[in-house]
Length: 529
Image 1: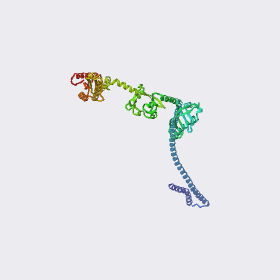
Image 2 (image 1 turned 90 degrees about the horizontal axis):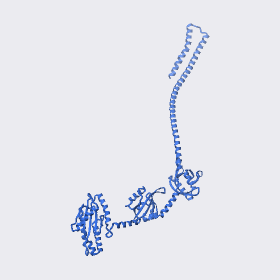
Image 3 (image 1 turned 180 degrees about the horizontal axis):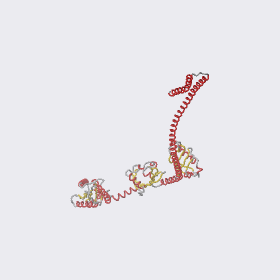
Protein backbone atom coordinates (compact mmCIF):
# COMPACT_ATOMS: atom_id res chain seq x y z
CA UNK A 1 0.00 0.00 0.00
CA UNK A 2 2.80 2.37 0.93
CA UNK A 3 4.51 1.47 -2.26
CA UNK A 4 1.40 2.52 -4.37
CA UNK A 5 1.06 5.89 -2.51
CA UNK A 6 4.70 6.72 -3.06
CA UNK A 7 4.28 5.94 -6.75
CA UNK A 8 1.29 8.27 -7.16
CA UNK A 9 3.11 11.11 -5.42
CA UNK A 10 6.15 10.71 -7.61
CA UNK A 11 3.92 10.66 -10.74
CA UNK A 12 2.24 13.96 -9.68
CA UNK A 13 5.57 15.65 -8.95
CA UNK A 14 7.10 14.55 -12.26
CA UNK A 15 3.94 15.49 -14.18
CA UNK A 16 4.07 18.99 -12.63
CA UNK A 17 7.69 19.32 -13.68
CA UNK A 18 6.77 18.52 -17.33
CA UNK A 19 3.53 20.62 -17.36
CA UNK A 20 5.05 23.66 -15.58
CA UNK A 21 7.06 24.89 -18.63
CA UNK A 22 3.80 24.99 -20.65
CA UNK A 23 2.14 27.19 -18.07
CA UNK A 24 5.24 29.40 -17.81
CA UNK A 25 5.26 29.88 -21.58
CA UNK A 26 1.55 30.78 -21.58
CA UNK A 27 2.15 33.26 -18.85
CA UNK A 28 4.98 34.87 -20.82
CA UNK A 29 2.87 35.22 -23.96
CA UNK A 30 0.05 36.63 -21.94
CA UNK A 31 2.20 39.21 -20.16
CA UNK A 32 3.96 40.26 -23.35
CA UNK A 33 0.79 40.46 -25.35
CA UNK A 34 2.31 38.32 -27.97
CA UNK A 35 0.10 37.68 -30.91
CA UNK A 36 -0.28 34.01 -31.31
CA UNK A 37 0.74 32.61 -34.62
CA UNK A 38 0.45 29.14 -36.01
CA UNK A 39 4.04 28.49 -35.04
CA UNK A 40 3.14 29.31 -31.48
CA UNK A 41 0.38 26.72 -31.51
CA UNK A 42 2.73 24.19 -32.98
CA UNK A 43 5.21 24.98 -30.19
CA UNK A 44 2.51 24.59 -27.57
CA UNK A 45 1.47 21.30 -29.15
CA UNK A 46 5.03 20.01 -29.12
CA UNK A 47 5.57 21.08 -25.54
CA UNK A 48 2.30 19.41 -24.52
CA UNK A 49 3.19 16.26 -26.51
CA UNK A 50 6.63 16.14 -24.91
CA UNK A 51 5.09 16.59 -21.46
CA UNK A 52 2.65 13.70 -22.09
CA UNK A 53 5.41 11.56 -23.56
CA UNK A 54 7.65 12.43 -20.61
CA UNK A 55 4.94 11.58 -18.13
CA UNK A 56 4.34 8.24 -19.91
CA UNK A 57 8.08 7.49 -20.08
CA UNK A 58 8.54 8.49 -16.49
CA UNK A 59 5.72 6.10 -15.53
CA UNK A 60 7.26 3.21 -17.49
CA UNK A 61 10.73 4.03 -16.16
CA UNK A 62 9.34 4.17 -12.68
CA UNK A 63 7.62 0.83 -13.19
CA UNK A 64 10.84 -0.59 -14.55
CA UNK A 65 12.86 0.85 -11.70
CA UNK A 66 10.27 -0.37 -9.20
CA UNK A 67 10.27 -3.82 -10.74
CA UNK A 68 14.07 -3.82 -10.77
CA UNK A 69 14.12 -2.71 -7.14
CA UNK A 70 11.67 -5.46 -6.20
CA UNK A 71 13.74 -7.95 -8.10
CA UNK A 72 16.94 -6.75 -6.45
CA UNK A 73 15.25 -6.82 -3.06
CA UNK A 74 13.97 -10.31 -3.65
CA UNK A 75 17.33 -11.29 -5.01
CA UNK A 76 18.99 -9.87 -1.92
CA UNK A 77 16.58 -11.69 0.37
CA UNK A 78 17.03 -14.87 -1.65
CA UNK A 79 20.76 -14.40 -1.45
CA UNK A 80 20.57 -14.04 2.30
CA UNK A 81 18.40 -17.14 2.53
CA UNK A 82 20.70 -18.93 0.11
CA UNK A 83 23.68 -17.81 2.17
CA UNK A 84 21.97 -19.06 5.34
CA UNK A 85 21.08 -22.33 3.64
CA UNK A 86 24.61 -22.64 2.35
CA UNK A 87 25.98 -22.06 5.82
CA UNK A 88 23.61 -24.68 7.23
CA UNK A 89 24.45 -27.08 4.44
CA UNK A 90 28.11 -26.36 5.04
CA UNK A 91 27.68 -27.23 8.71
CA UNK A 92 25.78 -30.38 7.75
CA UNK A 93 28.42 -31.26 5.20
CA UNK A 94 31.10 -30.76 7.85
CA UNK A 95 29.16 -33.03 10.21
CA UNK A 96 28.69 -35.58 7.44
CA UNK A 97 32.39 -35.30 6.66
CA UNK A 98 33.24 -35.86 10.34
CA UNK A 99 30.86 -38.81 10.45
CA UNK A 100 32.43 -40.19 7.29
CA UNK A 101 35.87 -39.76 8.83
CA UNK A 102 34.77 -41.55 11.96
CA UNK A 103 33.15 -44.25 9.84
CA UNK A 104 36.34 -44.57 7.86
CA UNK A 105 38.32 -44.87 11.07
CA UNK A 106 35.93 -47.53 12.37
CA UNK A 107 36.00 -49.22 9.01
CA UNK A 108 39.77 -49.25 9.08
CA UNK A 109 39.69 -50.65 12.62
CA UNK A 110 37.04 -53.18 11.65
CA UNK A 111 39.05 -54.05 8.58
CA UNK A 112 42.04 -54.62 10.85
CA UNK A 113 39.92 -56.68 13.24
CA UNK A 114 38.48 -58.57 10.30
CA UNK A 115 41.96 -59.31 9.07
CA UNK A 116 42.94 -60.44 12.56
CA UNK A 117 39.76 -62.53 12.76
CA UNK A 118 40.47 -64.08 9.38
CA UNK A 119 44.01 -64.82 10.49
CA UNK A 120 42.78 -66.30 13.78
CA UNK A 121 40.19 -68.38 11.91
CA UNK A 122 42.88 -69.56 9.56
CA UNK A 123 45.15 -70.49 12.46
CA UNK A 124 42.22 -72.18 14.21
CA UNK A 125 41.37 -74.12 11.06
CA UNK A 126 44.98 -75.18 10.68
CA UNK A 127 45.13 -76.22 14.33
CA UNK A 128 41.82 -78.07 13.95
CA UNK A 129 43.07 -79.93 10.90
CA UNK A 130 46.40 -80.73 12.57
CA UNK A 131 44.59 -82.15 15.59
CA UNK A 132 42.30 -84.23 13.41
CA UNK A 133 45.19 -85.54 11.38
CA UNK A 134 47.20 -86.54 14.45
CA UNK A 135 44.56 -88.18 16.66
CA UNK A 136 44.50 -91.96 16.80
CA UNK A 137 40.75 -92.15 16.24
CA UNK A 138 39.26 -91.64 12.82
CA UNK A 139 37.17 -88.54 12.08
CA UNK A 140 34.63 -88.42 9.26
CA UNK A 141 31.98 -86.15 7.73
CA UNK A 142 29.17 -87.36 5.47
CA UNK A 143 26.46 -85.67 3.47
CA UNK A 144 22.83 -86.66 4.05
CA UNK A 145 23.12 -89.40 1.44
CA UNK A 146 25.96 -91.03 3.40
CA UNK A 147 28.74 -90.00 1.00
CA UNK A 148 32.12 -89.24 2.56
CA UNK A 149 32.95 -85.50 2.27
CA UNK A 150 35.81 -85.23 4.73
CA UNK A 151 38.02 -87.62 6.71
CA UNK A 152 41.34 -87.67 8.52
CA UNK A 153 44.30 -89.94 7.93
CA UNK A 154 43.31 -92.37 10.70
CA UNK A 155 39.95 -93.01 8.98
CA UNK A 156 41.66 -93.74 5.70
CA UNK A 157 44.05 -96.20 7.37
CA UNK A 158 41.19 -98.03 9.12
CA UNK A 159 39.42 -98.66 5.78
CA UNK A 160 42.63 -99.18 3.78
CA UNK A 161 41.75 -96.93 0.78
CA UNK A 162 43.79 -94.11 -0.75
CA UNK A 163 42.58 -90.54 -0.19
CA UNK A 164 41.38 -90.23 -3.79
CA UNK A 165 39.51 -93.52 -3.54
CA UNK A 166 37.97 -92.80 -0.17
CA UNK A 167 36.49 -89.36 -0.78
CA UNK A 168 32.96 -89.56 -2.19
CA UNK A 169 32.45 -93.22 -1.27
CA UNK A 170 29.17 -94.13 0.41
CA UNK A 171 29.77 -95.22 4.01
CA UNK A 172 26.96 -97.80 3.96
CA UNK A 173 28.63 -99.64 1.10
CA UNK A 174 31.72 -100.26 3.25
CA UNK A 175 29.93 -102.92 5.33
CA UNK A 176 27.88 -106.06 4.75
CA UNK A 177 24.08 -105.88 4.52
CA UNK A 178 23.47 -106.57 8.21
CA UNK A 179 25.85 -103.88 9.45
CA UNK A 180 24.76 -101.43 6.72
CA UNK A 181 21.11 -101.75 7.85
CA UNK A 182 22.21 -101.38 11.45
CA UNK A 183 24.20 -98.22 10.63
CA UNK A 184 21.33 -96.79 8.56
CA UNK A 185 19.00 -97.26 11.52
CA UNK A 186 21.29 -95.26 13.79
CA UNK A 187 21.90 -92.50 11.20
CA UNK A 188 18.17 -92.19 10.58
CA UNK A 189 17.52 -92.00 14.32
CA UNK A 190 20.08 -89.20 14.70
CA UNK A 191 18.59 -87.33 11.73
CA UNK A 192 15.03 -87.71 13.06
CA UNK A 193 15.68 -86.82 16.71
CA UNK A 194 18.65 -84.48 16.29
CA UNK A 195 20.30 -86.24 19.23
CA UNK A 196 23.83 -87.67 18.82
CA UNK A 197 24.47 -91.40 19.17
CA UNK A 198 27.55 -92.52 21.06
CA UNK A 199 29.64 -95.57 20.26
CA UNK A 200 27.74 -97.75 17.84
CA UNK A 201 29.22 -101.24 17.52
CA UNK A 202 29.60 -102.72 14.08
CA UNK A 203 31.82 -104.34 11.48
CA UNK A 204 33.29 -102.89 8.27
CA UNK A 205 35.01 -104.46 5.29
CA UNK A 206 38.40 -103.03 4.34
CA UNK A 207 39.65 -102.64 0.82
CA UNK A 208 41.75 -105.80 1.29
CA UNK A 209 38.61 -107.74 2.29
CA UNK A 210 39.44 -108.08 5.98
CA UNK A 211 36.66 -107.50 8.52
CA UNK A 212 37.31 -105.08 11.36
CA UNK A 213 35.30 -104.27 14.49
CA UNK A 214 34.52 -100.58 14.87
CA UNK A 215 32.99 -98.28 17.43
CA UNK A 216 31.56 -95.06 16.01
CA UNK A 217 29.76 -91.94 17.19
CA UNK A 218 27.24 -90.02 15.04
CA UNK A 219 25.94 -86.45 15.29
CA UNK A 220 24.25 -84.04 12.88
CA UNK A 221 26.05 -81.38 10.87
CA UNK A 222 24.10 -78.13 10.38
CA UNK A 223 24.60 -74.97 8.34
CA UNK A 224 24.38 -71.41 9.69
CA UNK A 225 20.59 -71.48 9.44
CA UNK A 226 20.39 -74.67 11.51
CA UNK A 227 19.44 -76.87 8.57
CA UNK A 228 20.79 -80.43 8.68
CA UNK A 229 23.39 -80.93 5.94
CA UNK A 230 25.06 -84.18 6.95
CA UNK A 231 26.71 -86.23 9.70
CA UNK A 232 30.01 -86.26 11.55
CA UNK A 233 31.62 -88.50 14.15
CA UNK A 234 34.56 -90.47 15.50
CA UNK A 235 35.46 -94.05 14.63
CA UNK A 236 37.99 -96.35 16.24
CA UNK A 237 39.21 -99.82 15.41
CA UNK A 238 38.52 -102.10 18.40
CA UNK A 239 39.25 -105.41 16.68
CA UNK A 240 42.22 -106.31 18.89
CA UNK A 241 40.34 -105.15 21.96
CA UNK A 242 37.34 -107.33 21.07
CA UNK A 243 39.56 -110.34 20.42
CA UNK A 244 41.36 -109.84 23.75
CA UNK A 245 38.01 -109.43 25.47
CA UNK A 246 36.71 -112.67 24.01
CA UNK A 247 39.91 -114.46 25.04
CA UNK A 248 39.64 -113.02 28.54
CA UNK A 249 36.01 -114.09 28.84
CA UNK A 250 36.90 -117.59 27.74
CA UNK A 251 39.77 -117.83 30.23
CA UNK A 252 37.66 -116.29 32.99
CA UNK A 253 34.80 -118.67 32.38
CA UNK A 254 37.12 -121.69 32.45
CA UNK A 255 39.02 -120.43 35.51
CA UNK A 256 38.77 -122.36 38.78
CA UNK A 257 38.57 -119.01 40.63
CA UNK A 258 35.65 -116.65 40.74
CA UNK A 259 36.13 -113.82 38.24
CA UNK A 260 33.90 -110.80 37.80
CA UNK A 261 33.90 -107.21 36.52
CA UNK A 262 32.12 -104.44 38.40
CA UNK A 263 31.21 -101.14 36.73
CA UNK A 264 29.13 -98.40 38.37
CA UNK A 265 28.72 -100.69 41.38
CA UNK A 266 27.04 -103.46 39.34
CA UNK A 267 28.17 -106.78 37.92
CA UNK A 268 28.72 -106.40 34.17
CA UNK A 269 30.57 -109.73 33.91
CA UNK A 270 30.73 -112.71 36.25
CA UNK A 271 31.80 -116.26 35.64
CA UNK A 272 29.93 -119.32 36.82
CA UNK A 273 32.27 -120.05 39.74
CA UNK A 274 31.86 -116.57 41.25
CA UNK A 275 28.09 -116.77 40.91
CA UNK A 276 27.96 -120.24 42.46
CA UNK A 277 29.76 -119.03 45.59
CA UNK A 278 26.55 -117.20 46.54
CA UNK A 279 24.18 -119.84 45.13
CA UNK A 280 23.13 -117.79 42.09
CA UNK A 281 23.43 -118.23 38.33
CA UNK A 282 25.37 -115.79 36.14
CA UNK A 283 22.16 -114.45 34.63
CA UNK A 284 20.69 -113.69 38.06
CA UNK A 285 23.66 -111.55 39.10
CA UNK A 286 24.42 -109.66 35.88
CA UNK A 287 23.29 -106.06 36.31
CA UNK A 288 22.79 -106.47 40.06
CA UNK A 289 24.54 -104.34 42.67
CA UNK A 290 27.52 -105.95 44.39
CA UNK A 291 26.15 -104.96 47.80
CA UNK A 292 23.38 -107.55 47.67
CA UNK A 293 25.95 -110.29 48.36
CA UNK A 294 28.27 -108.75 50.95
CA UNK A 295 27.35 -109.21 54.61
CA UNK A 296 26.26 -105.92 56.19
CA UNK A 297 28.84 -106.50 58.94
CA UNK A 298 31.66 -106.58 56.38
CA UNK A 299 30.45 -104.07 53.76
CA UNK A 300 32.42 -101.10 55.12
CA UNK A 301 35.55 -103.23 55.56
CA UNK A 302 35.23 -104.45 51.95
CA UNK A 303 34.95 -100.88 50.65
CA UNK A 304 38.02 -99.79 52.60
CA UNK A 305 40.11 -102.80 51.55
CA UNK A 306 39.07 -102.55 47.89
CA UNK A 307 39.90 -98.82 47.83
CA UNK A 308 43.31 -99.45 49.46
CA UNK A 309 44.11 -102.17 46.93
CA UNK A 310 43.03 -100.01 43.96
CA UNK A 311 45.26 -97.19 45.24
CA UNK A 312 48.20 -99.56 45.61
CA UNK A 313 48.23 -99.22 49.40
CA UNK A 314 47.55 -102.94 49.93
CA UNK A 315 48.57 -106.01 47.94
CA UNK A 316 47.49 -108.97 50.10
CA UNK A 317 44.05 -110.54 49.52
CA UNK A 318 41.35 -109.63 52.00
CA UNK A 319 38.55 -111.76 53.38
CA UNK A 320 34.85 -111.06 53.91
CA UNK A 321 31.53 -112.82 54.28
CA UNK A 322 28.75 -113.10 51.71
CA UNK A 323 25.14 -114.09 52.23
CA UNK A 324 24.03 -116.76 49.79
CA UNK A 325 20.69 -116.95 48.02
CA UNK A 326 19.73 -119.60 50.59
CA UNK A 327 20.61 -117.25 53.49
CA UNK A 328 23.83 -119.04 54.46
CA UNK A 329 27.10 -117.27 55.30
CA UNK A 330 30.19 -118.09 53.27
CA UNK A 331 33.72 -116.69 53.44
CA UNK A 332 35.37 -115.20 50.33
CA UNK A 333 38.99 -114.18 49.74
CA UNK A 334 39.36 -111.46 47.10
CA UNK A 335 41.78 -109.26 45.17
CA UNK A 336 40.77 -106.38 42.92
CA UNK A 337 42.44 -104.27 40.25
CA UNK A 338 41.38 -101.37 38.03
CA UNK A 339 40.84 -102.11 34.31
CA UNK A 340 39.23 -100.62 31.20
CA UNK A 341 36.09 -102.51 30.26
CA UNK A 342 34.23 -101.52 27.08
CA UNK A 343 35.97 -98.15 27.05
CA UNK A 344 35.26 -97.21 30.67
CA UNK A 345 36.92 -97.76 34.05
CA UNK A 346 35.87 -100.89 35.91
CA UNK A 347 37.03 -103.19 38.72
CA UNK A 348 38.27 -106.70 38.01
CA UNK A 349 37.80 -109.05 40.92
CA UNK A 350 39.35 -112.47 41.53
CA UNK A 351 37.92 -114.49 44.39
CA UNK A 352 37.94 -117.89 46.08
CA UNK A 353 35.46 -119.54 48.40
CA UNK A 354 37.45 -120.19 51.61
CA UNK A 355 34.52 -121.27 53.79
CA UNK A 356 35.96 -124.77 54.26
CA UNK A 357 39.35 -123.33 55.10
CA UNK A 358 37.78 -120.93 57.59
CA UNK A 359 35.90 -123.74 59.32
CA UNK A 360 39.09 -125.73 59.60
CA UNK A 361 40.89 -122.69 61.03
CA UNK A 362 38.10 -122.16 63.52
CA UNK A 363 38.24 -125.79 64.57
CA UNK A 364 42.00 -125.63 64.98
CA UNK A 365 41.70 -122.35 66.89
CA UNK A 366 38.96 -123.76 69.03
CA UNK A 367 41.07 -126.81 69.84
CA UNK A 368 44.02 -124.62 70.70
CA UNK A 369 42.13 -122.33 73.13
CA UNK A 370 39.29 -124.61 74.34
CA UNK A 371 39.23 -127.34 76.95
CA UNK A 372 37.76 -130.35 75.15
CA UNK A 373 36.22 -131.83 78.32
CA UNK A 374 34.28 -128.86 79.71
CA UNK A 375 33.97 -126.68 76.57
CA UNK A 376 35.45 -123.76 78.54
CA UNK A 377 38.49 -121.80 77.41
CA UNK A 378 41.80 -123.45 78.32
CA UNK A 379 44.66 -121.60 79.97
CA UNK A 380 45.99 -120.35 76.62
CA UNK A 381 42.60 -119.06 75.54
CA UNK A 382 41.98 -117.43 78.93
CA UNK A 383 45.31 -115.59 78.97
CA UNK A 384 44.86 -114.34 75.39
CA UNK A 385 41.33 -113.04 75.96
CA UNK A 386 42.12 -111.70 79.44
CA UNK A 387 45.00 -109.60 78.09
CA UNK A 388 42.66 -108.02 75.52
CA UNK A 389 39.99 -107.40 78.17
CA UNK A 390 42.56 -105.77 80.45
CA UNK A 391 43.57 -103.32 77.69
CA UNK A 392 39.92 -102.41 77.08
CA UNK A 393 39.36 -101.88 80.83
CA UNK A 394 42.42 -99.63 81.05
CA UNK A 395 41.19 -97.53 78.13
CA UNK A 396 37.55 -97.33 79.27
CA UNK A 397 38.30 -97.08 83.04
CA UNK A 398 36.08 -100.00 84.08
CA UNK A 399 36.68 -102.41 86.96
CA UNK A 400 37.62 -106.08 86.55
CA UNK A 401 37.15 -108.99 88.91
CA UNK A 402 39.29 -112.10 88.60
CA UNK A 403 38.08 -115.27 90.36
CA UNK A 404 40.34 -118.26 90.94
CA UNK A 405 38.60 -121.51 92.01
CA UNK A 406 39.78 -125.00 92.86
CA UNK A 407 37.52 -128.09 92.78
CA UNK A 408 38.13 -129.68 96.17
CA UNK A 409 38.13 -133.46 96.54
CA UNK A 410 38.74 -134.27 92.86
CA UNK A 411 41.55 -136.70 93.79
CA UNK A 412 39.22 -138.60 96.16
CA UNK A 413 36.54 -138.85 93.45
CA UNK A 414 39.04 -140.16 90.89
CA UNK A 415 40.55 -142.65 93.34
CA UNK A 416 37.30 -143.92 94.82
CA UNK A 417 34.66 -143.42 92.15
CA UNK A 418 36.77 -143.53 88.99
CA UNK A 419 38.01 -141.01 86.50
CA UNK A 420 34.69 -140.96 84.70
CA UNK A 421 33.03 -139.58 87.81
CA UNK A 422 35.96 -137.18 88.14
CA UNK A 423 35.31 -135.89 84.63
CA UNK A 424 31.62 -135.51 85.46
CA UNK A 425 32.56 -133.45 88.54
CA UNK A 426 34.73 -131.17 86.42
CA UNK A 427 31.93 -130.72 83.86
CA UNK A 428 29.44 -129.99 86.68
CA UNK A 429 31.80 -127.40 88.22
CA UNK A 430 32.16 -125.75 84.77
CA UNK A 431 28.36 -125.61 84.48
CA UNK A 432 28.04 -123.96 87.90
CA UNK A 433 30.51 -121.22 86.95
CA UNK A 434 28.74 -120.57 83.63
CA UNK A 435 25.44 -120.34 85.51
CA UNK A 436 26.80 -117.81 88.02
CA UNK A 437 28.63 -115.57 85.56
CA UNK A 438 27.45 -113.73 82.47
CA UNK A 439 27.88 -114.94 78.91
CA UNK A 440 30.28 -112.05 78.19
CA UNK A 441 32.56 -113.03 81.10
CA UNK A 442 35.63 -115.19 80.35
CA UNK A 443 35.30 -118.59 82.07
CA UNK A 444 38.17 -121.07 81.72
CA UNK A 445 39.62 -124.31 83.06
CA UNK A 446 43.27 -123.37 83.56
CA UNK A 447 44.52 -126.59 85.18
CA UNK A 448 43.48 -130.07 86.23
CA UNK A 449 41.07 -128.96 88.95
CA UNK A 450 41.55 -125.17 88.66
CA UNK A 451 39.15 -122.67 87.11
CA UNK A 452 39.49 -118.96 86.42
CA UNK A 453 36.90 -116.27 85.59
CA UNK A 454 37.41 -112.66 84.47
CA UNK A 455 34.34 -110.43 84.74
CA UNK A 456 34.31 -106.85 83.39
CA UNK A 457 32.31 -103.86 84.64
CA UNK A 458 32.42 -105.06 88.26
CA UNK A 459 32.86 -102.92 91.38
CA UNK A 460 34.82 -104.02 94.43
CA UNK A 461 31.70 -104.44 96.56
CA UNK A 462 30.19 -106.79 93.94
CA UNK A 463 32.62 -109.56 94.91
CA UNK A 464 30.55 -110.51 97.98
CA UNK A 465 27.41 -110.81 95.84
CA UNK A 466 29.24 -113.06 93.36
CA UNK A 467 30.56 -115.24 96.20
CA UNK A 468 27.05 -115.64 97.63
CA UNK A 469 25.63 -116.54 94.20
CA UNK A 470 28.37 -119.14 93.76
CA UNK A 471 27.69 -120.76 97.15
CA UNK A 472 23.98 -120.75 96.39
CA UNK A 473 24.42 -122.46 93.01
CA UNK A 474 26.76 -125.06 94.52
CA UNK A 475 24.13 -125.75 97.17
CA UNK A 476 21.46 -126.31 94.51
CA UNK A 477 23.64 -128.83 92.70
CA UNK A 478 24.54 -130.65 95.91
CA UNK A 479 20.87 -130.90 96.92
CA UNK A 480 20.18 -133.39 94.14
CA UNK A 481 19.32 -136.78 95.60
CA UNK A 482 21.35 -139.95 95.17
CA UNK A 483 24.58 -138.10 94.48
CA UNK A 484 27.85 -140.02 94.76
CA UNK A 485 29.82 -136.90 95.65
CA UNK A 486 29.38 -133.25 96.56
CA UNK A 487 30.83 -130.25 94.76
CA UNK A 488 33.15 -128.20 96.95
CA UNK A 489 35.18 -125.17 95.76
CA UNK A 490 37.88 -123.02 97.29
CA UNK A 491 37.69 -119.53 95.87
CA UNK A 492 39.83 -116.40 95.80
CA UNK A 493 39.00 -113.10 94.11
CA UNK A 494 41.12 -110.10 93.13
CA UNK A 495 39.79 -106.73 91.99
CA UNK A 496 41.50 -104.61 89.36
CA UNK A 497 41.13 -100.90 90.15
CA UNK A 498 40.96 -98.88 86.86
CA UNK A 499 42.75 -96.00 88.61
CA UNK A 500 45.61 -98.30 89.66
CA UNK A 501 45.57 -101.22 87.18
CA UNK A 502 47.43 -104.52 87.58
CA UNK A 503 48.68 -107.09 85.11
CA UNK A 504 46.80 -110.34 84.57
CA UNK A 505 49.62 -112.34 86.20
CA UNK A 506 49.46 -110.13 89.30
CA UNK A 507 45.69 -110.55 89.58
CA UNK A 508 45.95 -114.34 89.21
CA UNK A 509 48.71 -114.50 91.81
CA UNK A 510 46.69 -112.63 94.44
CA UNK A 511 43.50 -114.57 93.69
CA UNK A 512 45.46 -117.84 93.93
CA UNK A 513 46.86 -116.83 97.32
CA UNK A 514 43.38 -116.10 98.69
CA UNK A 515 42.08 -119.39 97.29
CA UNK A 516 44.74 -121.43 99.11
CA UNK A 517 44.08 -119.55 102.33
CA UNK A 518 40.42 -120.54 102.04
CA UNK A 519 41.37 -124.11 101.17
CA UNK A 520 43.21 -124.28 104.48
CA UNK A 521 39.92 -123.63 106.23
CA UNK A 522 39.97 -119.85 106.41
CA UNK A 523 36.91 -117.72 105.64
CA UNK A 524 36.05 -116.58 102.09
CA UNK A 525 37.94 -113.40 101.31
CA UNK A 526 38.61 -111.01 98.48
CA UNK A 527 41.71 -109.07 97.65
CA UNK A 528 41.71 -105.40 96.67
CA UNK A 529 44.68 -104.36 94.55
